[in-house]
Image (cartoon, one colour):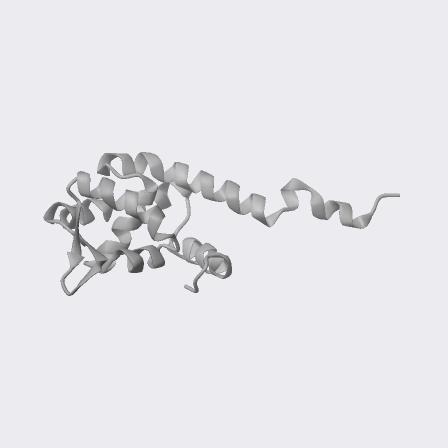
Length: 145
C-alpha cells in the first residue's frame, strides 16, 4: 500500500518546479525580441523601471525590481557602457547613487513599445490572459500588483 502523500513529492506536482520552468521559458521567449534592442532580459527590466521614473536611486531601482543593489549595479554599469543610462552621486549625499536615462535610453523606449505585442503574439496570450497570470502570481512576487 502506498502512502497517499507520495503524490505530493512528485516533481510535476511542485509549485516551485512549475514557477522555475515557466520563468526560464518566458525569459527565452523574450531573448530574440530584446536582442534587436541590444538588451538582455534583466537589462530590459531595469529600463522598464527607469522609463517609469528617472532618475532614481540605485536602492530604489533595486527595490522596484525586487533585487539586491549588488545585483542591479552591474546591470546599470553595462547599460551605462551602452550609453543608455548615466550614474551620478547625489549632491548633498555622496552615499546615494542616482541612475538616470540618457537621450538614447529615452529614445529606446519608442522601439520597446513593440515588445509586449511581440510577446503576446509569440505566446498567443492577450492582455487579459497576461493580467490574470500576473495577478495569480502576485502573492509570490514579493510585492502586490
